[in-house]
Amino acid sequence: MNNTITGNNESVTFPFADFSVGYPLTRFMSALQQNYKNTESRKEDIRKNSRTYDDVKKERLERLNAYEAQLCENFEICLPFLKNWVSQFPVEDKIFGDVLVDCYDTINPKFSFEQTVNNKLQMTGSNFLQKIRAIVLKMEETGMSETR
Image (cartoon, rainbow, N blue to C red; front, side, top):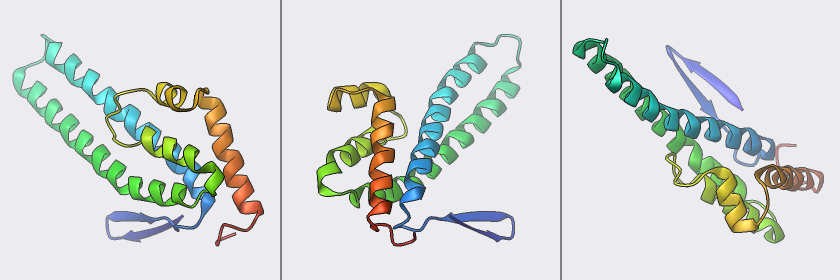
């Protein structure tokens, strides 16, 4: 992963063929989804708080909305990288890539990660992530990664 700092902005570029990037990317996307989910409960807490003035509530809600928009933007930036990464999985492991993309199809998940994996593959999320790691290791050992 290369970081390029320009002025006050920092942009991150991911090499497409680097298979070691994919697994941390899924963890990052999971964190984005969880934070997005948490913003809804935080908004509701602000709305219910009767001791806070309306203008303070409004300001806090605006900040949370801006934060939520930033989470969505970050998620949308990462999704094509994830799709590209799983598209490079070997043919026999394509189903795992498809399920991974299905889990991260949107930032606002209708189902939990565990439910999606269990419904599609009849396995637990931890076993699924172990399988993803095994696929990545096999790809790197067989030289499918261009950056290694």
